[in-house]
Image (cartoon, rainbow, N blue to C red):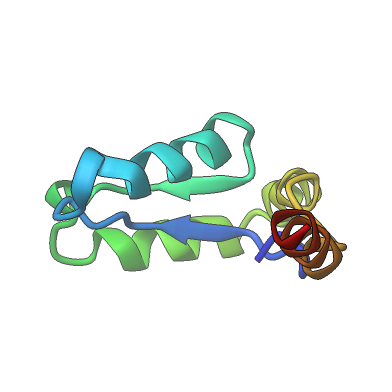
Length: 89
């Protein structure tokens, strides 16, 4: 999502160890890069309404796209490779 600069709505699973999905999603929310909705906050039509609200606000979409792009690690494959090489040697 970050590499593609895609605004997003994240709904983290509450059933994971140490609530890491929420913690990761909250970082993006705090940066203005994503919308965070907890499962317990979902009600009939609430997700649809949030999607429509965002689609109706091109300025917010652009801002979210710009903010999430800042999280992109475009050379992740090279970084992983270098870490493997270091671990081997």
